[in-house]
Each structure stands twice: as C-alpha cells, then as structure tokens.
Length: 306
Image 1 (cartoon, one colour):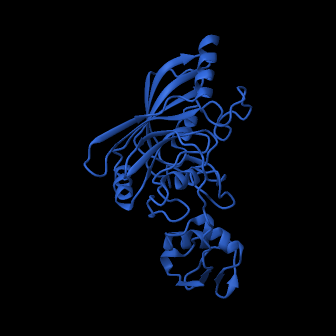
Image 2 (image 1 turned 30 degrees about the vertical axis):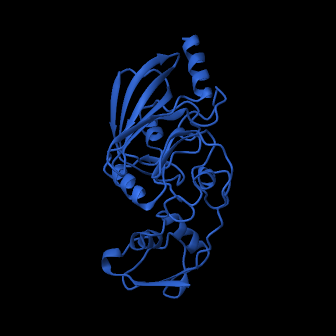
Image 3 (image 1 turned 90 degrees about the vertical axis):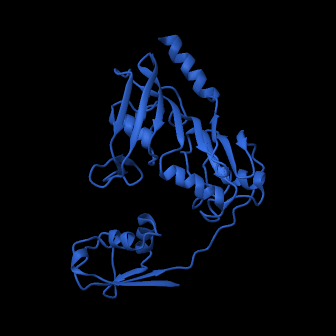
C-alpha cells in the first residue's frame, strides 16, 4: 500500500480534493483519483470525503493507493496492414472498430495484442505493459496510419517529434454541410467538457493549445470532403474543431448528428498520411494509408447525389 499525506496550505484553500490530488500526484489521472475517492481510500482529517469536497487551510489528507495488479496482455494473431516496418518502427493501417491498446475491461482484440504477436518481444516498454510500443493513439472508429516503436530509443525519438509537432499527420474526412471557404485554420484550445466528462470541448480557460488546418477537397450534397492537417494532437481534436464550426464529421454521434442517416459506424475520419524523421539517421519517411472501402463507397454515393 502506497500512502501519500498532505497538509493544505492557504494557496490551495477552496480547491476540490480531487483537483488538488491530481495536481500534486501528476502520475495519476483525475478519473483514477475520483475512483479511489469513491472506494473510500481518501480521508480528510480522518474522515471519508467525496470528490467535490472543498479543502480548507490546515486540512490533512491521507491517500492510500492500493498496489497495482497488471493484467496479462496476450499476443493475438490478428492480421496487420503494414505500411512500413524496420528494426525500430512499424506503421500500420488501423481498421475501423479496433481499439489501439488494452484498458480496464478490454484486454483483447486491440492493436497492441496484434503487435505483440507480430513483433514478439520487440516493442518499447516506456508506456508499460498495457501500451507496449504505443506512442500516440487514434480513436477506435478512426481508421488509418499509426506508428508503434520497437525499442525505447525509437520511442523517445518519435515522442520528441510529436511533442515538437514535427510529425506530418494529414487526415481525410467528410463533414456535414458545405464549407464556404476553401481553407480554414482553427486555433482553439481543447480540454474536458465542463459537464460531460467523456467529451472534449473548446475550453479557453483550462484547455491546451490546439491547431487544425482544413482544406476543402470537394463540395458534395450537403457535405464536404476535406483534408485536415494536425499541428497539435489533442484528444478528439479534429472532431471537436469541426463541430465548433457547425460542420461535425458524418457519423460522429458524440459531436454531431446522433441520427446517423448513412448507417455509419462512428465518425468518417481517416489518418491518410503519416510522415516522420527516422530515429536512427533522421531521413524522412512518409506513408500513405489508402481510403477504406466504407469511406470510398460513401464518397461515391455523395458525389452521385450531388
């Protein structure tokens, strides 16, 4: 059992206990801390509290973190559409419906399970046993290019490029309505939605910088085929930014139209091009994941109806 104790100074007075703990224990997510509070592992002045308890100067907090139990993540022989591979990195074209890495209650049929089978023991360990090799993620229903690293050296290099925004990431998407301008740059910070914790939103007070460049490829019947270039990589960035324009992605039931008139499985978003400097010698590698069949069929249908 790992026990953390704090005494509240005046600067933290009036702060929620869950926010205080997430600010002072940065290795733990706020959702995990809230879960632990719900399991009565946090006391203030010896009493159990709720996540929204407001701290006062002099309060004494005790947080008992239970020992972690790592689930066993097993390799699975799941076919991979490999776009590029060498001894350091692998780029794959992720299909729709596949989760990138295991999480609580979902330990199989993920990209990580497939990579463990294909790469054997050659995956970086920086992100732990739940996310071996994984440097970045794309949503379950987003298709296309994702890079994984086979060793810690490559992982550190790719992570640095992601942090410095030097990795090229171009997406293809179809959004609702006809965009008026040919090009847009959306510069709006993204953070957690103030009331719906599973959603992200434009959050100018607490959000992180987020920039998306949008180029119109074709205007269709009440829809627009676009290319999106990410300058940053926030959770749900393209989906949130397009929704803020009033043009959410087709099929996006979280940020768009829940009626889903085209019978789509999730948002129409595809990671089309991924470019990066190779960790060993710095030469630039660019991969392209061809549009999935469902995307091409929808595009033809919209073109025909136009």
